[in-house]
Amino acid sequence: MSALRTFRQARMRIARATEFCGFQSVRRVAVAAAAPTQKEEGDISNAFASLSGLEFKPLAPRFADIKAQLIHGRHDEIQTSWERLLASLREEVPLIANTGPKIIPEIDYKDLDSPSEHFSNEYRKRGVAIVRGAIPESEALQLKENLRAYIQQNPHTKAFPPENPQVFELYWSPSQVRARSHPNLLRTQTFLMSYWHSKDPNALVSSQHPIVYADRVRMRLPGDNKFALGPHIDGGGPERWEPEGYGRGKVYDKIWQGEWEQYDPWESSCRLPVNSDMYDGSSSCSMFRMAQGWLAMSETGPFEGTLLVNPLLSRATAYLLLRPFFSPIKKASDPSADVFSSEFLAPNNWRLDREPNSWLHGASPGMGQELRGFLHPHLELHKTMTHVPTVRPGDYVAWHCDTIHAVDSIHNGKSDSSVLYIPSCPLTELNARGLADLRDAFLKGTPAPDFPGGIGESQHIGRPKAEDVAAMTNDLGLQSFGLKEWDSSVPYLSPGQREVLDRSNKILGFYT
Image: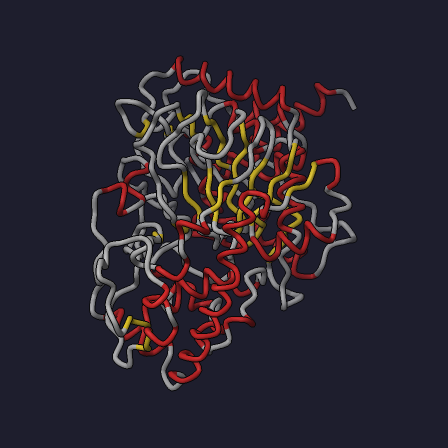
């Protein structure tokens, strides 16, 4: 089949898709109701209390009732599990501090079909990994040059901070569209999502069918200290404790039952009912991202404006969730400090609050979950927040959706630290609905639905159209963008996968 014929067929399929996803969305309205309204205009600073100049404080009184219900009748179990957790942290913290960036497992793109046992074990334990050479270095460098040209063509592009841009409110630049739909990157995402599993064989989720999630661009310059985003977790704040948030899927029930060691961060079926954006927050994620990630477009090392992660994963999650239930018996001499004495951290200095208060340390409705030394002292963030090793253009860094992460407070390097934020999302019904909204935003050139609204790139010069996607990727890339239907008749699919493909095709308007 000729390339021209293939392109024409792809364009016809796109026309069919856009007929349903564009501005007269009859079938989508029937399936998923009206498209959501845009969020208020803004930038990345609106997503975090610390960047917005807000203080951490107790929440509404109802959160005290939520906390009381979570541990009702299990006070002794929670107390002993807390003590076991602190003992485990005392072992893990020095190991991480002494190992440094080497604790983060790495794999070459060419080895994705045969990962070592060491890599697999460490990725499951640490929740973060680097895939070296996910796309060729020359391609990654060209993406950066093309991105610079796009920004120069469109000087009205919003960014943070506005006086010296480091993070751009771009979602549909040619470089981003090309990178997200790159066959190598889709294969990388599929590989990383394969570490997830489901206890329900019929769960409506497929990690073999990655879909697009549009996120921003970072092009951080030497000397910058404005984009000083401290330790945080995306995917909600108070929602992790709320019955109508993560409680919908009982994601953290083992932790609430005093059995944090049995908590499985890689089980996917429990995440499907979750509502991680109960407050319609700026930059709050409404889709299920198995892993966050970015594609490097520059060579960047520790302290050069790069990423830090906390490789404790399950232990850090358990601590974050249990911390609001405990108070020190003897207060610290300086409660605002980031480093505390061993006497203050000792298990016998901490007791369970029999009558919970409304504190959810670092959680603010509609904003990301933040962590600080004075709020989460036993994590010893000054020791456990670990730089990713030096990356080169084309390397892909991924971290589990529950992983604590941050960026260097100051970029002390000599060249730009540039990345495209590209998470890994499986196909689910929720994600298919999100993809339908993303497809609408892409066709209109407006910001991705989870992010601050406005006209976005609708008037940008050089913004790609649907036919451009068809010309730069393959069928898998078109499917990931919601521009081509999935084939649910292939023989290797499980019943759950087959069903979610069919339902997603209907949500996207490919058939009734």
